[in-house]
Length: 77
Image 1 (cartoon, rainbow, N blue to C red):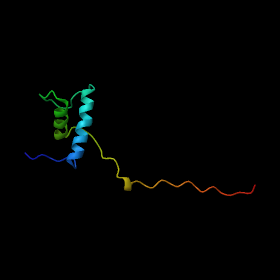
Image 2: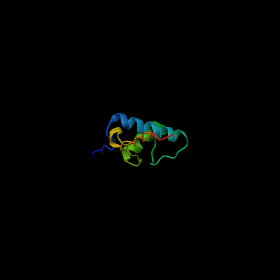
Image 3: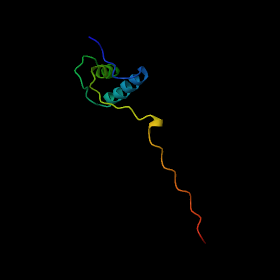
Image 4: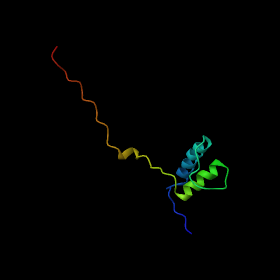
């Protein structure tokens, strides 16, 4: 059985698992049946099973640039 990599890096995997583990510690129910009692292990198993929904935030350069405010117009006083 081959494992699918649903996360693009180990760093992001740890961040996602840590966030989910905090949710589990706060009282969230596990999304899979497991014999583990440790929140971090449950979070990793959920990621491996592919049941967690997440999306990557947009990259800094991919967003449209904000419009610059118009320069104040000099009027007659």
